[in-house]
Amino acid sequence: MSVVALVPAAGRGVRLGLDRPKALVPVRGESLLLRAVRGLLGSGCVQHVVVAAPPDQVEVVAAELAALPHAHVVPGGAERTDSVRLALGAAGEVAPDAHVVLVHDAARCFTPASVIRDVVSAVEAGAPAVVPVLPVTDTIKEVDGSSTVVKTVDRAPLRAVQTPQGFNIDVLRQAYAAAGDIATDDAGLVERVGGKVHTVDGHPDALKITTAFDLAVAEAVLAAEESSAK
Ligand code: C5P
Image 1 (cartoon, helix red, strand yellow):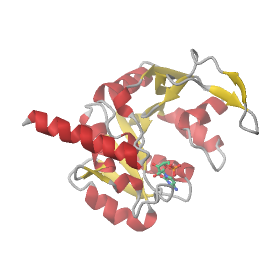
Image 2 (spheres, protein in one colour):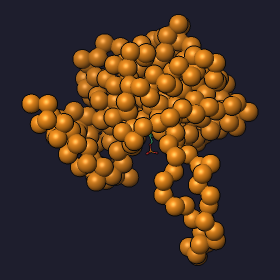
Image 3 (cartoon, protein in one colour):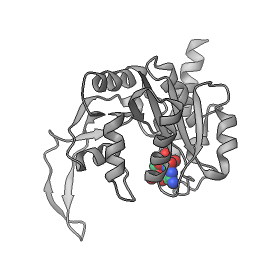
């Protein structure tokens, strides 16, 4: 029995105005993708990773991950949903004994190993689907169509979701078999087919690198860590 992680990285980074897929953007000389895949394999509980790459960049992405023996690269699809579906199909071939599947954002490449292990342990303990979460710290307002505040939302029961999201592999297969074209949240698909989604504690370091500011912060944090390690 093994654990396989899927990393959909077939987006083109258009929203960020990048000249390459966001996953290939380097932070201190190493791409988000390389850091994320190494983090998954280095957690000690993930045996295989399947990365969905832009179809015309499979070789570039494979070269990026060449140093990692258990990383496999497949062509992604038109939408994220298609990319996850294709990676899930490939997982059945590279890891036919997999009982747990993770879906992880390359942009969350600083996720601590403890979060990855907690997600896997919760699925192995019987949860069909597991997401790492953090309490919401900002004040949340609901607004109407003219951007006027309708009310202040009670944030006590709210949680922000990180990745990796973890699943019993049969549950994720069923959810994707029932899914339509577009889904941004894999656990949401499990909810839709009536599956229970459990939570474990996320971690602030598992932030999603989304903006140029996030990249600059990550560069600065790594630079400080490197100089203090000298
Ligand atoms: O573009 P967006 O931010 O919604 O993409 C979310 C994630 O899904 C990114 O990691 C992106 O690389 C991935 N994706 C994909 N295949 C697509 C579109 C997006 O794997 N066709």
